[in-house]
Length: 143
Image (cartoon, rainbow, N blue to C red; front, side, top):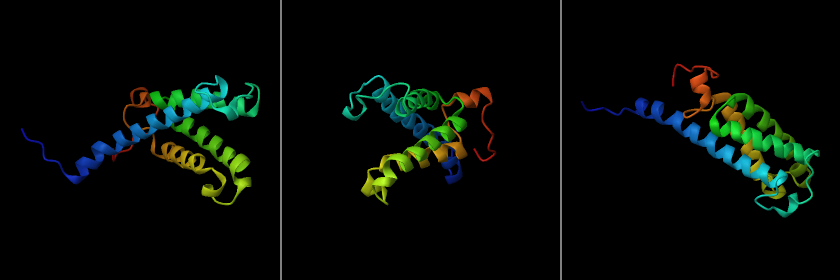
């Protein structure tokens, strides 16, 4: 039996998979940021003096725990919401005072992650997420 690929079939098949890959890659980015802050691995010189009980140390814990939750797709929407807020806070606290535009102030990655996470909060974690098996996600009739 041959399968006819329609445009609607293509999008309904691949959109959740692409969203799942975006979620996993975002989680991996978060974990490396967090481990650099709290475990000093990989080594990033600006994180050498980070203490676990500091604001940056707390951010590192959020990055590691949130990154792991994103990778496995558990509590994806709420994890993405919290991490998006963390990125917005970081942007306005650290980068925005350096200049008006992200390209000037070095905040490109931060603002991009903020909006990727806001998207995941609104759209859900996509394919390959534990939320899909545990019923932790709103069922979208289109996908």
